[in-house]
Image (cartoon, rainbow over all chains, first blue to last red):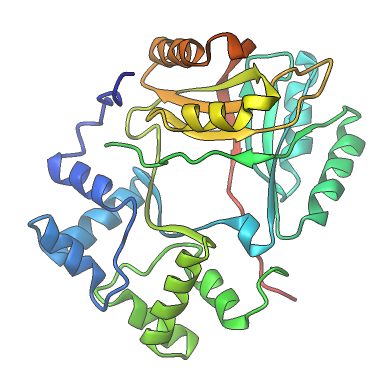
Length: 159
Length: 163
C-alpha cells in the first residue's frame, strides 16, 4: 500500500501554509481564542494564522472554513444520480439539470452514463420530486444511486 | 430545515454554513449575532459534534489547488455477503476520499461499491485502482473507473431560511 502522493502544491503555498492546511482540517478547538491556540501549537501568531487563512480562502486554496454538517443527520438528504446523455444534447441537458437548485454538484464523466450529479435536499421527499422534474425536463431516465452504507474514510487531504 | 427541531441549532447552522468568523473570538461573535452566550454556542457545537451532526470543524481544501487534479470514481461489483468487510478495507486506504455501498441498476449497472480515488494524474489514480483490485481479489467480479472530464456545477447544499 503506497502512501499519499506528494502533491504538486502551487509555489504560492509555503511550508507554513501547508502546515496550517494540515492542522486545520479537523479538531478545531471550542475555546475562547481557538485561532490563537492553533497558532501557538504551530509556532506562529494568531494574526499570522488569520491572515493566511483568509488569503487561502480568497484564493480558493480552501473552499471553506467552519463546521462541516452531516446533512442526513440534520434531516436532509444527498443522492448521487446519473444520466446517459446523447452527445449532441450534452450542453442542453447540462442546462436543464443545473437549473434545479437541488443539484449541488454535477460532473461530466467518461462512460455511457456520462453525467453524474448530486441532489441535495433539506427533506428526504425532495429527492423524488427533483428526479421527476429532471426526467420531465430532459426526457431521459435518471439512475439514482442512494447510498446504502457509508464506509469510514479520513477525508483529510495532505497539503 | 425540517429535521432541526431546535430553533437555536437551526440559527447556528445558518450562521456558520458560510464559515466560522475569522476573528480572534469567533464563538463570542456568533453568540452576539444569535443573542445567546458564547458558552451556549460552544456547548451546542460540541453537542452537534458528539451526535455526528457536525462531522468536524475545520478547513476544506480545494483538491485542485493542492495538486490532486485527477479524480476517478472507481466502481466495483463485489459479493454482497462480504460488502461490509470489503468496503471497510477499501475505505481505509489513504487515497480513497469517499466509499459507499450503493444499489446496482441491472442490467445497465452491475456495481455496488463506489470508491473515489484522487491523485496527481490519471496514471497515479489508475495505479491506486490496481491496488484496490489486488486487495479485493476474486471477491470482485468486475470493476470500472469513471474519470471526470469537466465540473458542470459545484455549489453544495445551501440550507434556506424557513419561510
